[in-house]
View 1 (spheres, one colour):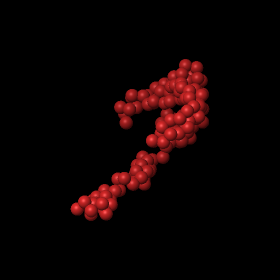
View 2: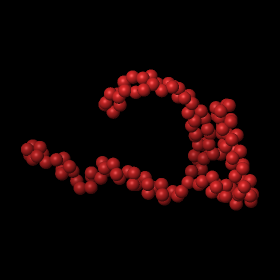
View 3: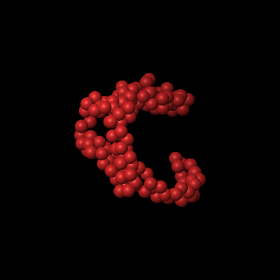
View 4: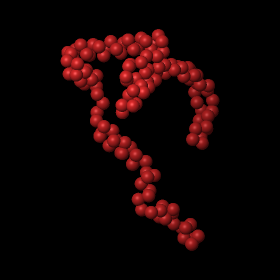
Length: 134
């Protein structure tokens, strides 16, 4: 029995269909189908159109309001480091520290890494009201 196990691969000993979970091509296909089922993301003009029909305003006015919201949020994030769009999201800045040059072990291999300067990263978090509604 030991000789038979040595000669045959473990793949032949596993039940049929069990190797599908190890193939890398299965997960992305399933993710693509799930994303297509959710629908396309709303563009700026689509968002302006939806808000205009709901609030009975002109699409041009809503578009200018969205532009002003973006500019006000940008200046506020630069100045204070944090801005909240009520009921939607909170945008924060965070300092990512500098990294030193050297050798690091990544996935069991030694890789030479270049030094990188510190930088400010912008992050967005959804508000708890949005989490509860979804």
